[in-house]
Length: 291
Image 1 (cartoon, rainbow, N blue to C red):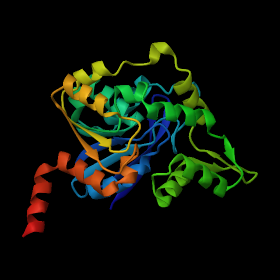
Image 2: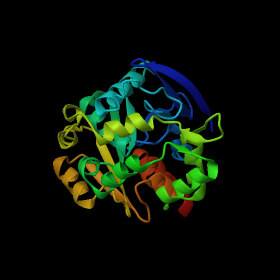
Image 3: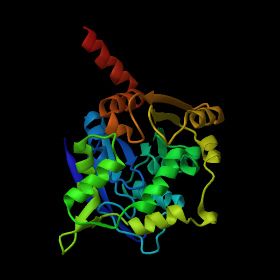
Image 4: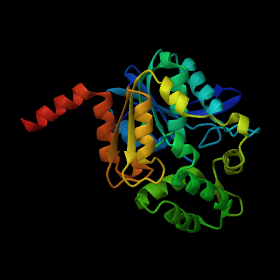
């Protein structure tokens, strides 16, 4: 699978971009979660070949992208970054997939800039999930209790096993490789701006916190909500509330998956994504498999 990496100057920050697939294929941009990174989507990118140009970037303060010295980690900043990325890449229209925080950013972007979005996929995210679900409370607790450094790699691995018990060890190690960086004394620290991100989430400026349901109402494209069957983040009653607000929304549930659906059940997640984005291709492949 063809992969490209490059950097863009966006709103005064340098952002790292990963791409997979043919440059002339249909584009889709994928947005990771609050402590995520762009390469988390490599698996789903592989599944969408050769039909898609998959674009994922480390959102400000994460991965290989620059940290914001002003700790501006609010939804409007992420949305403006996404708009700048789309415009710099010269995209007229794109599909959009967002997980968790990335899903919130995708919802707001699709509502504000419908001219850019063809189809939208929301992975385990929604208004109530962001505001007061058990998963949101868990994430805030994790941000409060996450250590700033680890004595060695194994100590970090133990922490990640406790933090993400539902994902495979390979997925946990992949996360650590993308989330940690070594210090000169042999210890490890986070590669993302943990202090700034935690501050924004735990003590936000009330004037910058968005009410999300109005944006759900304003989405004007076909939208699929994918919920993890075991998630503590996006509750079923919130999914139903979102569907009631906008007839363009549909949903599915992936069994035996928590909040990190694309890690917990990658094949099932990829199938639902492809079926939504490429229904004709999926039907063709299913017919071939039966014959």
